[in-house]
Length: 78
Image (cartoon, rainbow, N blue to C red):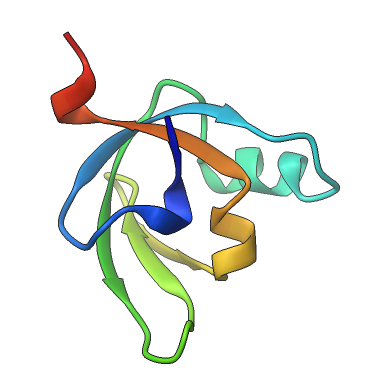
């Protein structure tokens, strides 16, 4: 498993777990649910926010927020 902030643009991933944090509830409310498939769209330069396609909408997170989400690449799933 990797953290979401390490995934390259264009890759689709499955959310496996959200680390315990004060932001955990906020991430769940934004739609980052365990088992959900999302795609990394693009990153802002200089370690800026990362945009994700959650299916119905696009949302961006800071790198430190995205590092709380553990994911698995679709190609790793059997």
